Image 1 (cartoon, one colour):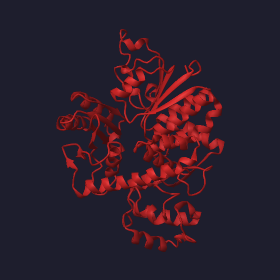
Image 2 (cartoon, rainbow, N blue to C red; image 1 turned 180 degrees about the vertical axis):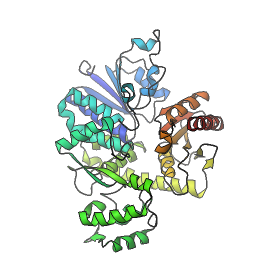
Image 3 (cartoon, helix red, strand yellow; image 1 turned 180 degrees about the horizontal axis):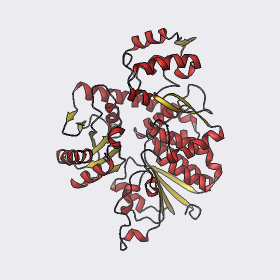
Image 4 (cartoon, rainbow, N blue to C red; image 1 turned 45 degrees about the vertical axis):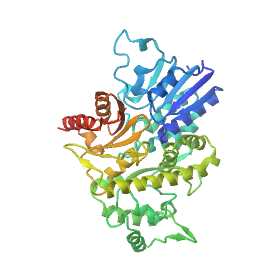
Amino acid sequence: MLRASKTVTLVSHIDADGITSAAIAATACKRLGKGCEVVFAPKLSEEYIEKINSSESDLVWVTDLGSGYLSEFTKDPMIITDHHVPDPKWRKGQTFLDSFIDICHINPHCYGMEGSTEACGATMTYLLAREIDPANTDLACLAVVGACGDIQDTSDEGLVGLNTEPLWDAVDRGDMDVETDLRMFGKETRSLIQFLQYSDPRIPGLGDDSSECHRFLESMKVTLKDGTRNRSWNDLSPEEKDRVRNGILDRLNDADRARALGPSYRLVRHPRHSELRDAKEFATLLNSCGRYDDAETGLRICMGDETALDKAKQNRMEHRRNISSALSMVKEENLVRMRRSIMYFNAGNRIRDTVVGIVAGMLLNTEGFRRDMPIIAFADSDDGIKVSARADRSLVRKGLDLASIMKIAAEMVGGYGGGHNIAAGATIPRGKEEVFLDAVDDMVLAQLI
């Protein structure tokens, strides 16, 4: 399909997985000599589906989106490299019109794999790019960044399943190294105090207390500065890391200890203290672009234009401020309410619809909030009410599937939804929140009995 097409329109999601997917696909098209336009979509609303169906390009390639809307596409031909739960209505009978539409659908669910843990959108896009030309293995590290941005690196083994394909390609090329280390955020760019103070999981006795973090590091005989510059975690010697790491792990319970320690992924061709050297920090930088209507800046960085880095850093600072103020607002105003089987809050227009899911996920890992219930978050959106649902992985192991719950509950009130078993979303009409919550509450209860 790609080789036969002169012009390609790429449609991708706005998060780190979507931006890295777009960069991989756009680079693969460019190397084939194809004219390529990139369009970023926060979700596949009716507007974007119509744009896809009416596209005048020879081919539309949708990355990190599309699987949940297969039965609504009429564009011919299309390629979809995605990892979300596929549309159950697609090609279920012999008389469906879409049976005659040429859609190449590449999704781990089609091969009996789990799309929330074994393959992200960037990984599926990378596998196609590698098949086009083995030289495209230089894009492998982008797929790893996409997988980390999609929180697929949190198992004891780190990245698993198909995600190990780009990982080991990147390692074999010398673009990336892997070490067992603390998996907390900010190993390259945060000062040691901030690294401990704002860690996830929260470290008892150190979380949110900079003076205690200072005393702890002094007790571990760790110097906080190198001249005038604050040292970061990756500035420490192996011996210093061992002392501090053991001191941190001693303070954590078994579950948090498992979350805190595991494989860590470093893009070694980027300089020390760069936001692009650690896969998690790279992904966060991309997320901060996409969530604030500037996915194009993230795309430029992924395609090698580091002049865009200053703009991305501004986006990241804005992202951090907004997330921090949103978390404070939800906690200080006690917005979270409880039902039989779920927690929920309605942020209205006070939290951007593009970041309310991040806030919900962070609340799950905040002291004082329950992790034995999924959390549902509402925020105003241009086309209705945006819903984000997040859950702890322990609930998924018990049978929870937020993707099916969001899809069914949304359709019951005239909306649409989908996603993953552990993280999903929907868009519903205004005024339907309570009816929607009734349905979600019932289904979560039924799945977890």
